[in-house]
Image: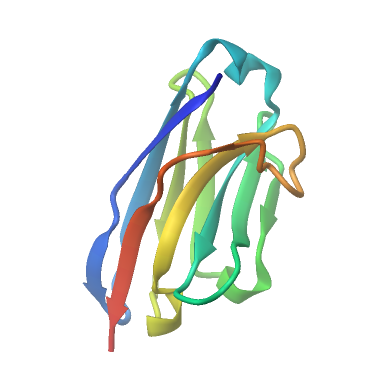
Length: 119
């Protein structure tokens, strides 16, 4: 199994920044190829925000392009999501994920961390 532990969520004003981190562990993590971040706003479905594979290729949602950056430290098995110029519509629970596919790294899920952007 793979364990994913997120940190870094919180409350921020519109225009501010937050950095999410997610540390992965577990014997089967080496079988995955990509890590990512999904988010789920209240009453809505999960949406992929950003993903990155082990060689650094990325997949970024149009809604956050130019504002969010994803990065991966392979030595630490840790993925980061730097979120700048945050908007109230970015408010959601953000989930760290891992999987085989860069386009859909959703085989394993963390418990989520709340991000709230006030206007």
